[in-house]
Amino acid sequence: MKVLLVTPPFYRILGIYNRYFPLGITQLGTVLKDKGYKVAVYDADFYSDPDTIDYSRISDRFPAYLKSFKQKNQIWNEVIENIKKWKPDVVGISAYTTFATSAFHLAKLVKENIENCKVVMGGPHATVRAKEILEICPEVDYVVRGEAEETMVELMNYVTGRKKDVENILGVSFRKGKKIVSNGDRLQPKNLDDYPMLNRSLLMNKNKLSSEDMGLIMTSRGCPYRCTYCASTKGIRYRSVKNVMEELVEVFEKYGTRQFTFKDDSFTVDRSRVVDLCNRLIQWKIKINWECNTRVNLVDEELLRLMKKAGCNFVKVGVETGSARVLKMMNKGISLDQVRSAAKLFRKVGLHWTGYFMMGVVGETEKDILRTVDFMHEIKPNLGVIAVYEAFPGTVMFEEGLRKGLYREKMSLDDFYSMAPDSYYKVDPRVQNEKITPKRFEIIKKEVNKEFHQQNMMIGNVIAMAKSKIRVYYRDPKIFFDDVKKMLSY
Image 1 (cartoon, one colour):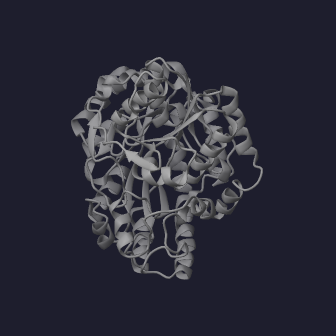
Image 2 (image 1 turned 120 degrees about the vertical axis):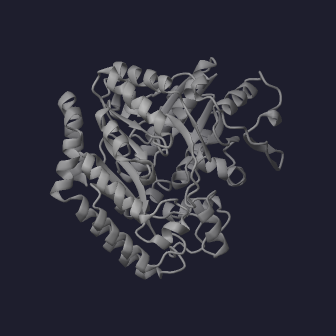
Image 3 (image 1 turned 90 degrees about the horizontal axis):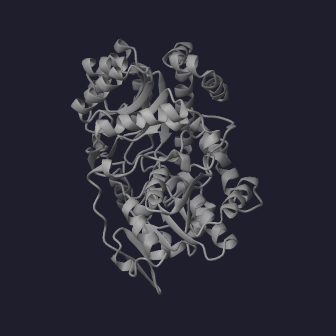
């Protein structure tokens, strides 16, 4: 049986740069391949010639995205033709809330063009909205919830007749007549080392990806924190440092990767583990660079200096807001003073750092947003990224929005096809939150985006970015020219 795992096009339709290969479905494909299935991973969202990397203006492109579903579209035609050439028996589709419509549309195209093909949907949106998906999207046969490696293997065994009863497969939702059945949740795997090493050769378009794109590595799953805007898996599990090093060596030798990215939710939760990994990287003698996500309350000068010595050149942290009140409301578990201290440490140690912010959350006022802008100027990140909050089901903040009448519990398929992604689940698409009028919020948003854009384009920040990757550029000049192109598009 042939299984094709697909990330549907979204950023590609918008003409916006989207980094890396799809790690989640590649891991899933690796496990299926290990169990004897013929598998390929198709990143239909990969785009080698983006117009821009400026995500602050993404909403300006949503009308074109909605049009792509209603008229002949070159990208969608190309995607379905590539799928038809592979002739899969099962298509697994990755669904995130932001591009749920793309996932639904792809399911429709698969059913229209490939006879007797089963469609399975998984991913973050599928995990929290399995019943809704099966209610509104008849082309989806099964939904897999949560971490799906074991679930998908059992489901494929059922589809091929090796397993007789789908109702015994934990983590699966499906239709039984007119009834929708959701089997019990599957326990999260504890030992991540039990899974086979990620097989990047499954990627259909791997030859188009850069060595840097191939350097995406996940060393842990989950997060111990409880931020109200996040639906990340609660609790944290780790791969062994030995296992991580084996993957690093393999990717370095096979793809020539010099710039890696550790994609963990919070890379430095276990300080001793990071120290162990850094020491092994130093002992390896192969000079690589890497970046990671962390939190301002999980860094100190000694650790940052060791990380830099081991090749770390970029650190990314969630600042979120400059309002202490909103920060507490988010249950972020940090203080503004901790952000200030971390910002000083990043500069002192000489690490390029990115601060992520958001605006328009439930309960936020105009003064809160202005405090965020002032705070960004105070802490001066090398790169400041500001996003408008989107309503994500499965989060505490989404439930708060429901209580306040901002969001609705369900959407129809017509809603998904007619609404811009940043309006999903809103009662009134024009209303961002209950404290600021729609007209005023649009004015504020433009002013804030301008402030962040000007900060990011300061010559010192541009130079800092280039200096942080000088060793990578020396070894792979193509990455330098790619980065110049991205910067010019920004």
